[in-house]
Image (cartoon, rainbow, N blue to C red):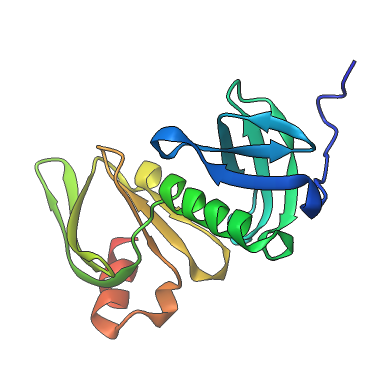
Length: 165
């Protein structure tokens, strides 16, 4: 019986990732072909290109890729693309305003992809403070943004964040 808690590090040469029909990530892992593979970052998320879990279509973990940089170039590019799809997280450049109206916290933000608005019922469930100054903001519809380091925000944005939290 396989140990459920065993961590299997995949040798870089044993991983060959490609896009299949319809743009689905697939490929070979340890000489077994998979039509569909899913990938997940393990914790902590600050290691965005290290310790990537590779799973089959049933969600069973095949192993962990220690570092993307160790993979062959085509596999590395496909894996980066897949991680971008899975963890789409616009970066907040500026907090324009934060208001409390009708039992909702309304955040107007400028991100690297343009302006956005988040609506939160409460701050405890929708604002996550992480080490290194990182803040993840989510809203009632599941939309998410990140402040990579709140200390690097402009003075207006820092004041709004500090006053709100």
